[in-house]
Length: 83
Image (cartoon, rainbow, N blue to C red):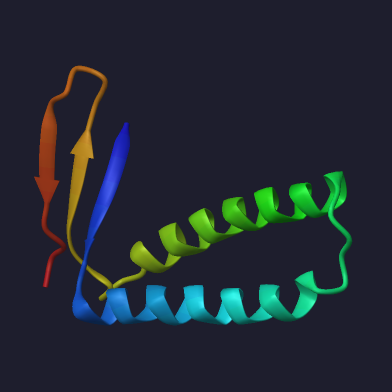
């Protein structure tokens, strides 16, 4: 039900580069927006985009060393990618 990818060094580097790129873009864009509901929604949706972007990067071949799955009964399964 729930999966967590244990990142390799390459995967970690890509996630941090992605975060930095997004942060830099937001800093440039945000100055044009007045405080208010729209800016709040902008930030909320960026957080969602960040989450899914990181999840996509983590799931890319070569970016993880194992996948840990946990179901609703707290049964944990560790899956190692085939080499």
